[in-house]
Amino acid sequence: MKRLRLTAWIAAVLLTASLCGCGLFPEEEEVLAPPLAAPASVTYTTTTVERGTIVDSVTISGTFVSTSSYDLSFEKRAGYLSEIAVELGDEVKEGQFLARLDTDALEKDLKRQELVTERAQIALDAAKTAENATETSIRLAEIDYELQKLQLDEYRNELEKQSIYAPADGVVSYMSKLGVGEYIAARSTFIRIVDPDSLQIECTGDKISDFQLDQEVVVTYENQEYAGKVVMTPASAPYEMQEEGKTFVRIVITDPLPEGDLLGKSASVELIRERKEDVIVIPRNVVSMYSGESYVQVLEDGVKKERMIETGIKNVTSIEVVSGLEEGEEVIIK
Image (cartoon, rainbow, N blue to C red):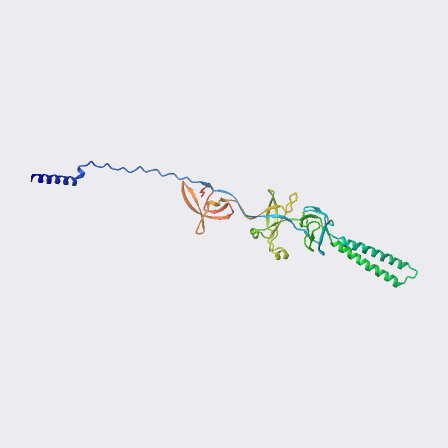
């Protein structure tokens, strides 16, 4: 009985101790908050707003071409080439022989006809001096001679058509790849002669629609600039060119032409649409758009702020600022 009472007393003591455990164990230490780190400073890359010149222009490339050219062919007869007297790039003079078809058979006919015509001429002379000559006999001899002479002229004209001669001074700018002994069709262009002193720059491409007749341009050839002018556009081109679907602009250099062989060489042509000097100009990549409005980010006393601006001339690299920025301000580069 005493043992049961002792056990009950010990259990009561343990229960009381468990309910008041905080008094039996040491108090927990207060946990300190970690020290706060200082925020990192923000560094911006900026550019200073300055005044300058801005140009809105469009540039296209072109090639020097001759405005005076002659496409030459054997107009009346096809045949086999027997002689070619020039090469690509040769300078030629007006009337110079260039090429010929095989004319062996025609030359024989011509020689034969020359003899027949000579015989008719002798007969005519004899008829005129004959003792028994009459008007009829003389006239018959005259008719025979005239007929033979007409036939001779036809042979000579035909032989002339078998050859090509230069119609003017110039340079051979094109030649067919056909060689001696090869067959060439009638009216097939064999040689092209151009005047190297009558040059314009022919330009093609999507940007030619920006060019209008009589506009002044700047031509750059081998790093040298020359004044130029638009002298032909697709709308002002001859009807034949429009029918062929050719679309180009032609530029003439109004300064003295560069020295050297220009035919076929490349040049660039710049059309200045608008130019302003002493205006606020900033890089194009610092300008952003939102809801149709332009804005930039400026740095004021180390703080980034957005600023709406009004823009003017624009080109590939720069933008004119009409209002919203002052010279000397710092604009953040994106």
